[in-house]
Length: 130
Length: 292
Image 1 (cartoon, one colour):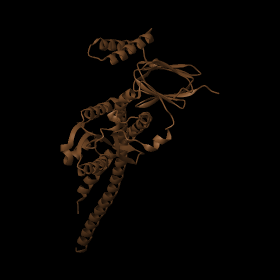
Image 2 (cartoon, helix red, strand yellow):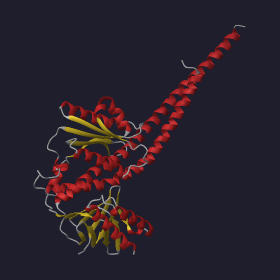
Image 3 (tube, rainbow over the protein chains, first blue to last red):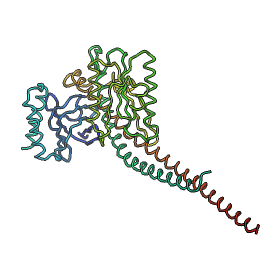
Image 4 (cartoon, rainbow over the protein chains, first blue to last red):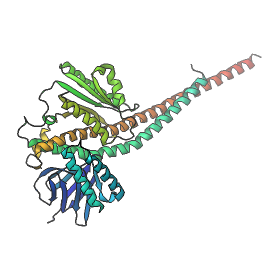
């Protein structure tokens, strides 16, 4: 029996990925979450982080800022408007994002929630850049 | 009877018009392909989003405390109509079809004694609506100088709608746009987005799955609903863009064909009168020679 389930990443203007995977790690709002086949139906939010899709042939990584995830009937659906494949990001562009995010976080007017999200964004980007 | 010169000018002018319509048709055809692709690519996102919301709705046991965006304010007093049209004309019945549908709805709302508010997107629709319903228009958007409409434009409109809702400016929101079916058929549609319309048939289908939520349903809903509004607006934008190009293409195709027919008719006319004048001249010469 195969241990695979389908995973789909869809952004408003196009479908980004449709693949078979045996494990997917998503940065859920309340913590990193690994999903295997036959997980119970689930709806959750994402915070900035990395989506890691483990396929039979290898691994795919995506950087994501926000999104909504639905898992049902062995179908993982990720809806997001800010997804980037790690291969498409280079060091310089990441540095720029980190810088602007750090500027934002140092300002006082943003809420705790935003701070929480931004800090994750910066952390993830920094680990990518190492 | 127009003179030969006049006919010649007419033919020339019709021919150059034909050239323009032909070029416009080809441009529309090229753009259509892209717009159609975009519309088709965009469909899954909005559908899936709607599905998630439906699933969430089912799990809410306590409709009193549910977010207002989902269940509405409980009243049906003020109706907000968002009319999406194109910024350019020359696309057949595209703009008029939306406006016609919208106007029938306006009339109905007003005749029921409800209050009407209108937001227009695109200048062409505004022009048509302004004449009769100008005083109801509260906001107008136009993305004329944007080459391609992206999600951020839809968000601008979506956020405006949500802001108005939060200020209790309306109870019900309806979206008017053209649904792209294929190149020759576009169906004007009125979609209610606030409160979210419950599709009862769909609900029964999947009512067996119960979900685990993280964080709580309410929190998810609160975040997801505004997003869904923008998504639905964006979908309408995409459908509209494809419909506009499709509609323009068919309209321009017809115009080109009509111009061709007109040229043929005028050419026959031209040839006939040319021949008539030659015959007349011949008769004059002959009868002149005979009288000698």
